[in-house]
Image (spheres, rainbow, N blue to C red):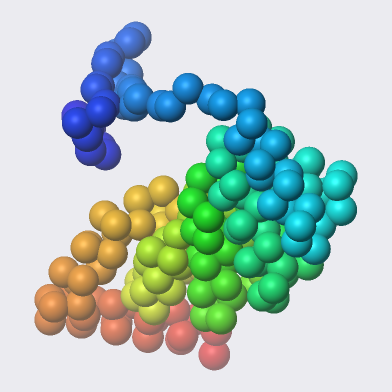
Length: 178
């Protein structure tokens, strides 16, 4: 397998020379979206906003996420955008709040965390940005492969050679802007 991991409830198939990871999904229950809308509507969202948050929902997760994000630093519109199709109740909200408390703007935090982010994605991006990566690179890398990048960055921290290269790289960059 080129990248990623297979789990007990998944398999890899090759089609047209490309590998695809296939995972099992639960059958959708139409009432899941209704439960989600009811949860969001009990919170600060209007009926229309609740329906937008929960379009295609398979649990209450998007509603719980949006309520949490709105209690934090995000507007209603930002909370809706951040949490639509969320599968973890507070995943995107925790991710975006953590990233925003760090070096990332609201827009960057939302880009990193929309729909599937977790606090691990934010911690990964913060750590990557402290290391050799730009904000854009940190977001791109940690949005998809947070666990893998965190392990790599941890290895880099323990390597004197890598730390010397990072220090020299940062000094060169700093010199360009002086």
